[in-house]
Image 1 (cartoon, one colour):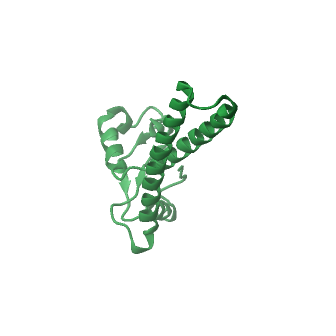
Image 2 (spheres, rainbow, N blue to C red):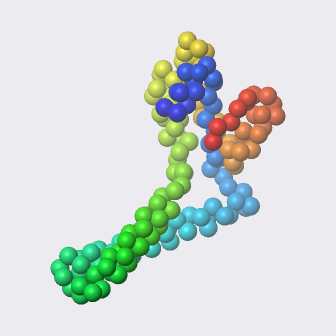
Image 3 (cartoon, rainbow, N blue to C red):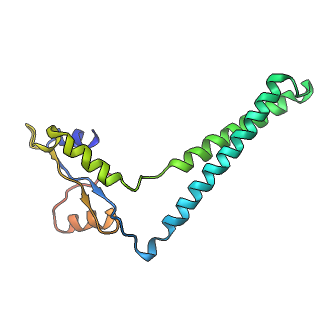
Length: 148
């Protein structure tokens, strides 16, 4: 849909995706993947703790003088849960380029030039990183604008 909006403005939209191969210099990706998994695990541990606190509050196991402090602890844990679980999924799926290509192939209207001349081209999959492919297209004057 995003590419279609540009196509309706008369622009040939060329989605660019990262390649399957990762150069040795890109090992940070493995570290980010590990950090996302760690955040997911921490989020679930915090969720279990928050559920226990919530249950204790609901069943009256928390003394009335400690109720306010316990509710504050619960709110802090819930905030950390949201942060950790969000961090665990903030990534582009490895099959994003293929999924996008399938969506473009199935959207016949997007592939055919519209009345303004714009359309969505097939996904350009770079060898390593999309950035290099985009810069190469700029240098060859094949691209006027990049939106990320």
